[in-house]
Length: 174
Image (cartoon, rainbow, N blue to C red; front, side):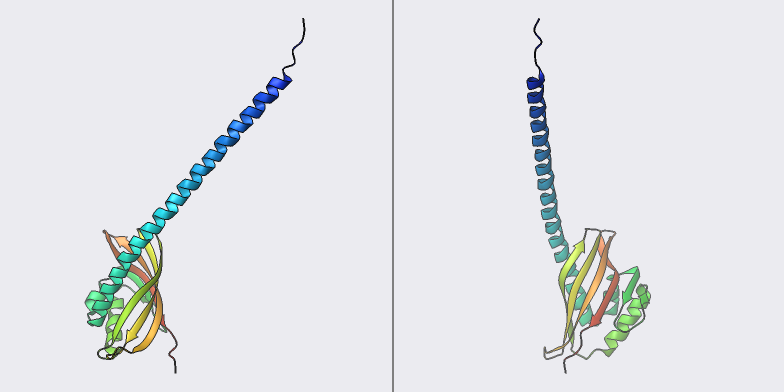
C-alpha cells in the first residue's frame, strides 16, 4: 500500500483558513470604523443642536441682564451653583449669586448692553461645557469691554441650568 502525502492538502487548508479569518477581521474592522464615524457625525449633530439650545439660553440671559432683572438672571443658575468671577472670591449658591448679580447691575452704566456669543461646546446632552465671549456696549453702541467665560450646564428636570461658571474681562485698550 502506498502512503499518501497529505501535507500539501493540509497547507492549502491552513492557507484558506488564514485568508478567511483575515478577511473576516478586515470586514469587522471596517464595520467598527463605519460605526465610529457614524457616532462622530451623530455627536457633532447633537452638539450643534445643544449649542443652538445653549445660545438661545444665553440670548435670554442677555435680555434679562440688559433689562436689569436679577431674578431672571439668577433663574438660570442651579441652587447649588458656583460662580468664579473676575478678581472676586468664589460665590456659592443661587442666593449669593443673585446678590452678586444685583451688585454688578448697580455698577453698570445706564443704557449699556451685554451680549454672549458661544465659541464652543463639548460634553453630552446631560452636561455641557460652554466656552464663550462677552461684549458690553455703551448706550451709543460703542464696545466698552469684552471678556471670556466658561459655563457648565446640567440638564435637570428637562431644562439646562448653570452649575458652574467662570469669567473675566479682557484688558482694556488705552
